[in-house]
Image (cartoon, rainbow, N blue to C red; front, side, top):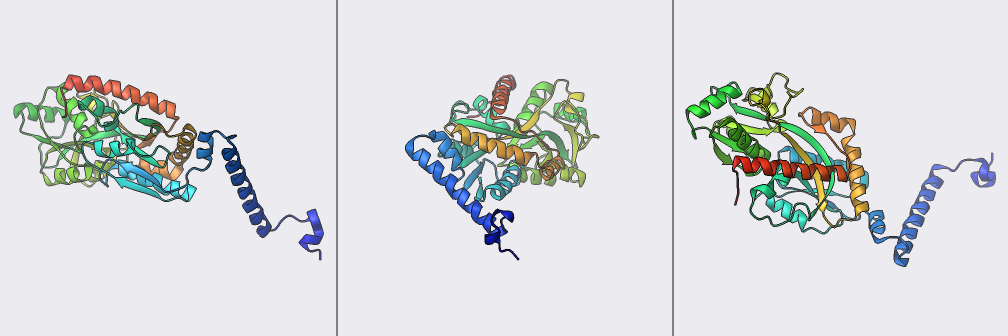
Length: 347
């Protein structure tokens, strides 16, 4: 019987030889990249991208744990870790209408290892605050638009309201008597209700919380009577009978709860979809942004991820950084107009 050595090229390499070859090949290319970078032959951005990621990553979430922003971050963290072998830390930094966490991300080292889970408030805050500690357009680089979901308008089950028309009637009959909760000033639940108040000519009292989880608990307990919130945060409670859904914020009904009317059926022209995306500090090298974009798009396309999000009423989106940048600019312009019309301003 011929040995592998005496057979020469007649026998395929064994598993051990394949592994050794892969190690040699990896060492060769890493050495070549390092040599080219040292000689100045490889562009600096390309050299940094080739070595990315080289340490643990951090996903800053400007909300407390429990909401979909947090869920999205944890799904991405799990898959990025599996793919790259580096730990990915989800860093919840709630406070200041998302300004605390957003400012932290804006001032992070711009090498791709720190990212921000941006959402609705990211595009609206410039219109709500007289001054921000960062510049939304200049201090961030769009990476990818990850997902979208409607907000559901829900009420405490003991409130004798079963439709938007009945809510409007109750609010007009007792101006300033109904309390509505939100996940915080400038969040989509807050602005969705302010837009409804403006369009329907009603008055409800705003009670701001630090995130979705505590306000949902208080709605169930009756401390607040009305709430707009993302589908993943309220639909499980609606299905369990702990609260009542009376409308969905998008122009058409949600396939997840087709029995719930769209708000536009009672208030023509009302249409809001909440979005979630990933941004990086502005000076992050473009090849690194492209690498992050490609990997997150891959994760969003995974059947188990799409299915998991769809069960919560969330659609995955994806796309290029340029597409997300254009979407952001459009959202900022749209809500600047809506905020001005509603007369909302935060100091």
